[in-house]
Length: 126
Image 1 (cartoon, helix red, strand yellow):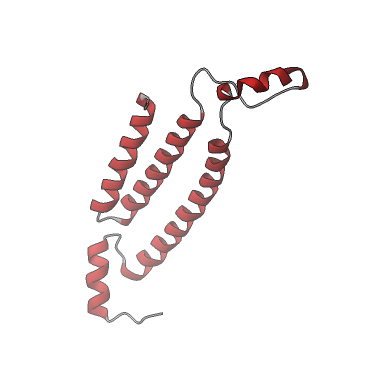
Image 2: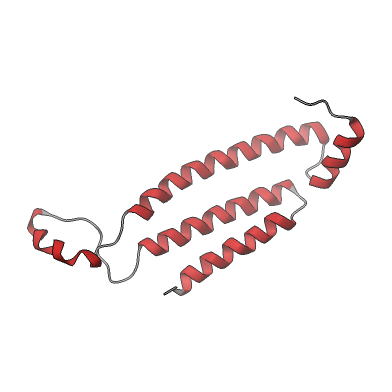
């Protein structure tokens, strides 16, 4: 059912998820988000490209080939992963902008130090 590359992608996802949960540094959290995104993309690309299947390109001469539809790879995962890459780039860009703003304000990239500094300074709410 699962191939070794699928298991690798799932393992990378959960390792980076664990890193995201346990990380105290914002930069490490952003890197873990990037790694999680890459693992999801790897998994779906591996699912969409199994060995022994043909690409979904059919010429006029290959109309008899339509009877062999289970042997054609599904193009939907590849198309969805292109969208995922664009959305991931936008999310990471917003994270970096937020990191820049927080670093200018608190002069640290540590989550706990920011929370204690915000409590001490009575930071005004926006």
